[in-house]
Image (cartoon, rainbow, N blue to C red):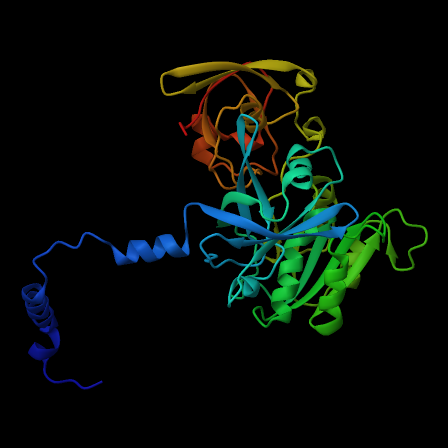
Length: 393
């Protein structure tokens, strides 16, 4: 750095002002209303996208993978662990559903960019059934991406990662394993993956291929109900976690709500600090009445839900066993959801009267929202007649 003199060094503002005036004189007299920065931001992070399905293949006897490309050729930058949010027009309703991206971020770059989502159909769930029955090669889906904060961050996480997965919760770790193999993530990954039987492992062949060629990725399968399995058996517990952990380990979890309660307890017993344990959006329990604190008198009942949108009011029925968002979707009332687990806040609504139950694990509200009666429709369950106010879509 060259120091001229005090007045010249601190007089930079006047030089910048002169340059600005000179540039103004050179400017075109014709207005140019376009904003190149805004245009670039919209291209990198579009508010909505159209995905063209290019391939559908089995990922296990109960799961399939949908490979998609963007209709305009551009796929926004994302991290392994983030998700795409689909907007599905089914009947009179528009349903929003998030699915973790199972392909690697590196797959979305290059001459033929694509993403993949893997969906399991092992229960009578409406949207997975729709995908399996109707979404075929050539289908165009609407959605947007990326969303979620569940991804590896080198500034925060250690280079030794143990992933704890159950069922379809393996999908973000399939993406992570592929990205490690491609050199996009500098970490060693051990996946403890709980399944029921060895003949129905979601993405089992893909995981085997990655671990066979990349020494930084190790997959340990744990079967809960498979007498012929010769590997680890039972459920992922403290002993198994401790067996495959290093000295400085970051733990990542993605799986069903019931599994989370066991894993959370095991990691607390091991003394794992909060900064070393993170989990994906858990979604809602299959049986909300089993959650601690749920009022037993509400179970099995149906309530009246008065929905206010501007000056319009609709009255619909809402079951105590389904979230407010599901009740709205069933009645074809538009509601914008993304994470479906109470985290993102897109479905933030106002409780005008009545009582709701929110799962303590899936409650992503701010303290002030709780105090002032705001809630997330995807993670709130009616336990009385309700009157709510939702955004107009």
